Each structure stands twice: as C-alpha cells, then as structure tokens.
Length: 329
Image 1: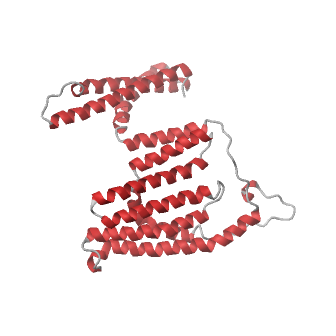
Image 2 (image 1 turned 135 degrees about the vertical axis):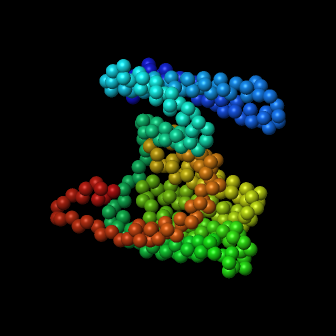
C-alpha cells in the first residue's frame, strides 16, 4: 500500500501507540484498585488522562501517515489527502484502541494477519496423490448410506434433547427444576453430536490423509464428552470448572491438528499458527462454544442427511474425451 521508508515509520509509530495504549489500560485498572481501596489516584493511575491523549495522538499520526501514503500512491493531490488522513487518524485511533481491549478482538485480528502472512511465504507441501476416479466413486457409494444413517440418528436424539431441555421440568422426575432440565437436555444434545461428527469425518475429502480428519474428530468427541460430564454437576460451577477446562484444551488441540495440514507455507510457521489458533480458542471460547452449539445439532444433522448424503451422478464422457482436472480431483 505504501513505500518502504514510510511503511517502516508507520509500523514503528503504531507499535509505540499500542505500547502507550497498553500502559493506558494498566493505568485505568490501577485506578480502579485504588478507588476500591479509597486511596488517592497516584503514580501510574494518576497519569491515565495524559497517557490516553498521548496514545491517541501517536496512533492518529501512524494511521494518518498510512492513509496519506495510500492515497498519495493512488494519485490524490496533497491538498485533499492530508486533511482526509488527519480526520481518519483522529477518528480511527481511539476506536481501534478501545476495541483491542477485549482479547477476542485482538486474537481474531492476529489470526487473520497470520493467514495473510503465511500466504506470502514459500514452502513445499506434501501432497497426497489423487485417488483414481473409480476409487472416489466407490468410496462415495460406500459411505453415503453410513452418512445418512449417522446424521439421521444424530437428528433424532438431538430433537429428544431439545424437548427435554425445554419441557423436562414439567414431566420428568429427574429434572427438579428448569435449570436441571436444561443441563440434562444439553447432555443429551452433546451425545447426539457424536454420530454427526462421525458423519462429517466420513464425508470429508481425504486430501490431507486419514489422520488429519479422524485425529481432530476424535479430540472433538473427547471435548464433547468432557462437557457432558461437566453438565452432570450443573449448575454447581466449581465442580464443572475442571471438566470445562479439559474440554477447552481438547478443543484447542483439535483445531490445531485440523489447521496445520491445511495451511500453506513452510512447516514451522504452519505449526506455530495452528498452535496459536488452538490456544486462542481454548483461552477465549473453549468453555462456552460447545454448550451454545449443542442446540444446532439437530438442524445441522438434518441438513447433512439431505444434502451431503445425496447421491451424485458422474458425468459420462464421450469416446476420446479427456477428463478435466476438476472431474478427477
């Protein structure tokens, strides 16, 4: 977007702005501690306002230099681009700084940057030789019925889980109240997800090898099992914490295992990015995602049963016609 000398200045300026933003956040937190203890705002806590203004100014300068360089490269005259760059820096800098306070925001941004960076690296990837067309057709025919059966089983059990979660407190002796009914219903839904995961693994293309499909799937099954065990103690949070933490770690491992073979670039950076993806999931989302997704299991299973399991007719080629690469991939 911009010339190398300006790019270096922009990077250093924005790095300084982020450091200042971090100090501003620490100052804010320290101020809360002192206020709770009825103590005066001294030291770092007392510098919050000044740090905020300095971080805002430095961030606005970096963003303004970036915008000015980008528009200058596009041929916009300086009389128009300089005011526009100044306004953009002043407005964007505080929004970005405050948005980055939440760790999920910075993690998602970092993940996107990592994917873009991997795309710029050159590396050899081990490619599995494509299966012959006859083998692919035979495999599709063999697994289609199994996928439909597993997805249908998952949908049926999942519907039972939804019904129990929403109404079990009114008719089940095992559900003392609505909270217990919801916990037991979620447990049933989690159990119903296991056949669905097997169906997805069976229908996944084997481009990266069997281990790259069934390994992560097995870890997700263990993750779901750990959440199901945790919900046996619901709503007692202390008893659930250990199992939910274990489930988050298993889910992070599954994401890393699934991601690494499918990324592009040298092996070392792919492993680093895959582990970072898994760690980010485990730290930020691992204990909350699975219970929330549990209620989508019946819907996803029905969709899979009626779409992915549908037979596809192979295209018949005329004599002497050469198959296109997309027909044999």
